[in-house]
Image (cartoon, rainbow, N blue to C red; front, side, top):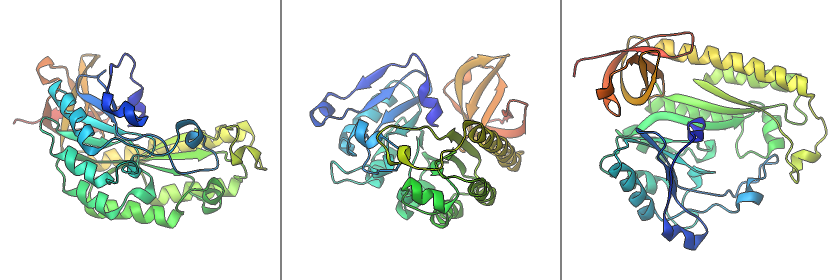
Length: 323
């Protein structure tokens, strides 16, 4: 989902009330079907590789009521899906004494919005309450983007992450118990200072065990004024590049396996305006990208489909079912 936020030509709207707190809510309207609503900014975590707390400040947010008004403005424009964005969205409420679940409940009640996605949530903030609410909501989609960063506990400790692999796996399992067919996108950093070949293999084995649907893989990049920048054990760029390639291949295999398990099943797709090769495209509830012959009347509508096989580009053929 995070990659979707990079659309060019988006119009940004701001909430003037937020300027009083040094924070502004914003939503982009570059797509006719989807909008990105900023609900939180800053971070109180101090991971050893990250400069965000220095650059963006402490975690903060607008009141739930202000964000509901933003969502209502999006609905008034006819967009049907909202992606909730922020630096650490699960930490919502630091400024106002509210909670992330308070925000989810309020947004769930906004008329005219059919779908919500959470852009990214830290595993330690993927609480039982958040899981239970999203499992019971018709609007919050079975799709989570969760940063792992490493599947090796030794490296997680060096990164100063707030969980270990056992806790991460437990949270993934808790979601799957309540939300069958859920899509997990997972962030992984390779080549962190001190990461040995064996550490990397431990990460690979862990990813094979938890089997996410997709991996967002990044080579470690030095950030000045961070503890990691001063750590020993720098990983050679060619070694890091090889590790990125390995996990990219694993991601492709995991995604195709996830989609193969969904083949033949019914799903609901929100159709977008893009037209390519005579086809239009959309996403299922659990974030499988699909195609079907272009039909202008279906843009920004949600229809039932039966999922077919993936093509070479990783897009599933969808057969629209009669309503």
